[in-house]
Length: 117
Length: 113
Image 1 (cartoon, one colour):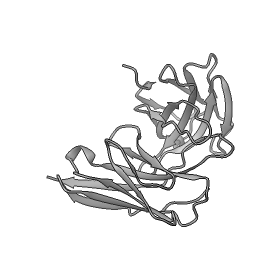
Image 2 (cartoon, rainbow over the protein chains, first blue to last red; image 1 turned 120 degrees about the vertical axis):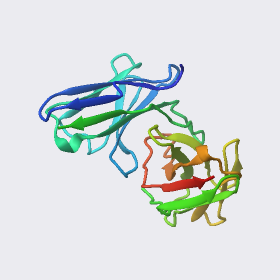
Image 3 (cartoon, rainbow over the protein chains, first blue to last red; image 1 turned 90 degrees about the horizontal axis):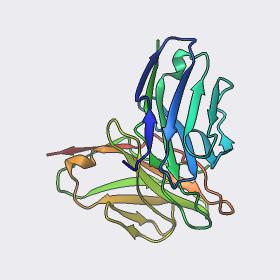
């Protein structure tokens, strides 16, 4: 399978626990994005990487959230001291960077559904 | 970022054409119009994008108004598999740098057999 994969697909945790999600992008893609999606809403941007460099972070990414992409391949998103408001679908996407008028579409994974009880 | 406005929901009959509208009256000259869709329980997938001219691909057509303040995604023959939430997104190209997508609530398309 050459698509974007995410692990785990579902995570149930108790409030206050830490959780970590993994995203494996399409191998040739050097851009990797994280989004969060709550019920009935469109995805909201959290952060993105170009290779191992984290180029942009949304103000939604509080101090409890941290993302890494250590070798420019897979990425992890960690949430510390989870809160009930963190319950959402966490989506990962990857793409080529694109320059000038050339856009490359983002390919999304199936997401990790987090439930904080 | 410029905002888009889409109807919350639309219905279509199978095998009939569907026209999904999007208003973007504050679009700037550097904004491209992108469409993504999200099938139930899946991540979004790219459909099509354009700047000024109408665009066609194997999935759909994109008709862009002459003043670029609105656009329409056209599915030529809707199938049950086209039932999804369709997002119209403006994506700027500042100096060649392209970042994240900004999603609204989209249009939920229902397709009746």
